Length: 272
Image (cartoon, rainbow, N blue to C red; front, side, top):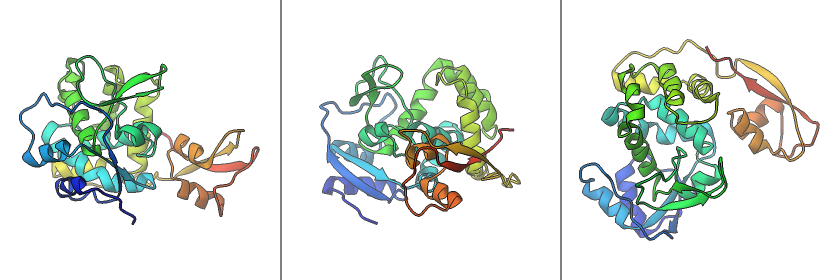
């Protein structure tokens, strides 16, 4: 794997350990340093933040995203009580498995906007409205930590922490009820991702429970999709929560080239 990393990024490698995928570093263009409302960060984290280096971790598929960030999601679950399955599903969905434009520019894997009181780095990005303010992080691990702080320090999410940590369906619906997203199908999308990729296995591991999926729903059914003008294979893969590689395999494609009117097989999954 190709790695491009600055000297300052080495402290991040020590800190993150298992997160050792392809990385690209950039000079941090914003003037403000991120501040935490919690107790003092570990000295290694301070050193990494002080390095003022933007580190982007490149992954090539949803499966690689999960392998890369599952240990971080589990660590946050142990510390803050948010199911790893929920955090991973939100990360997959909100960041386009780490390959979306916002994630590439900001390392923001959860679509968290600046909100009142945010004193860290930020970038402007078109979302529900034009030129909205989104939080920017030097490394994805800060996005994962800030997502935990975002949920644990806002009263509207308080009821989530009364839910069992192994009830991902209740958590998904609770997030929507608390106003995390405007998409009416947000809970269903999270549940679909969790069940497609068996993300609840990471919850069971943290809770010390035996895990047995028994779903076999990874690609349990298929729908047909007719390619529209402006479509790309990547855009279609994002829409149906499947990697480009899997989409190519399903349709016997040798390249990413597709044509308007072409009918593709795409995975279909029912949410229980």
